[in-house]
Image (tube, rainbow, N blue to C red; front, side):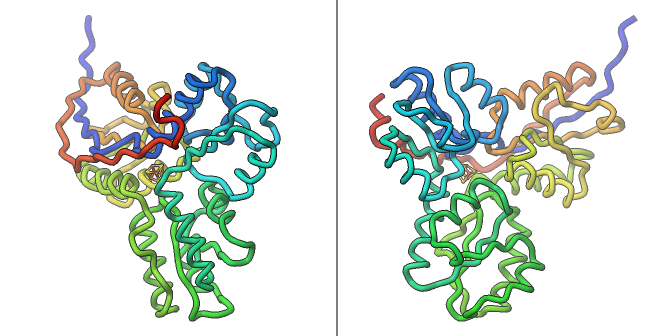
Length: 316
Ligand code: SF4
């Protein structure tokens, strides 16, 4: 006798998944493979997603943590998160053919950091220790000219040598709400601190957080498709929880925990900026094995951002 599956309403956030910076970074590796043939080396995961990395590995990309592991004479791509200045300098000194897949929105923060240092400012950088983007941005300025602020508590206790020549910048993939709180503390403590001309948290991060906020209040639980080392994906879990929904991160369909879905009637789904849409459909298909799913349409802002490829690859 056929068993009846329990009903489950799905609200799939919009926008979600790939951003323009991730799209561009993956395309750079693909074009490098087409143009130069395998192997193409990539310093760090090009984007924080195992599915994407495995797909590129299968086509001949070789991922290494450091430039030292790149043999002479092969092309190397730098990841979307950006790299310290020393990395391209070292690649150039070795005569390596390198392609920089740093997201233009991360590069924008790098250039701001350089300018602020030229103007004699000390930078308070809001971000997460150890994230490649933070390492890359710190690597744009001389040592000691930038201080990491991870929390509102750090903002309360930081003791800069000259409180009147400060500026702040932020990582692009932070929590919009947490960052606003940290900035409020900095502005209260250091009224002359210089703010970036425009928000450093990128459009994709802000849009995905707003989209998950929009659905989370109507959901019992929210699944975020993304990797644990993907900053913007982890932030989406936090945003959903703050809105009162249970939330967890899943890499792909096989990771769906049906015990966790017990009692859920309305499930939200979203994907971090480095998670492809194919994984969203895979998760939905997996859930549909046990539930009678009904997808409710969700309206969201339309994203039209497209970044140019590095010179030299466009005509490939
Ligand atoms: Fe660029 Fe934002 Fe995407 Fe990061 S999340 S690659 S900063 S668009």
